[in-house]
Length: 75
Image (tube, rainbow, N blue to C red; front, side, top):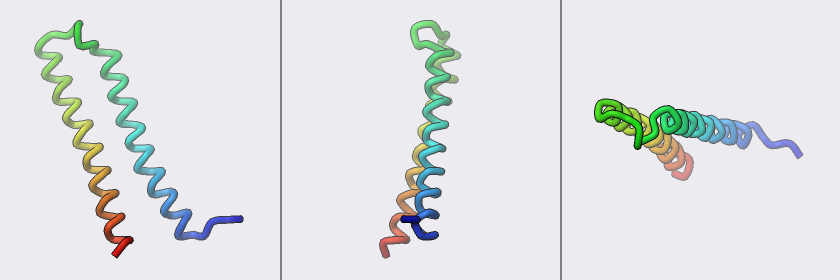
């Protein structure tokens, strides 16, 4: 049985958000490989902290957008 347009649209929206999170995860894994904590300078550590914060902000933005969209559809 095929899905209707509304269901397919919702699936694609969620997949897009999860794909974005997957890309953030890849960035995190790459940073961890390139900059192991035991082998970096203080300056690199500060830059890494900044990068981690930016990744977390991106995850938060995705989640907040998801929550907003869910609230709109349940009203």
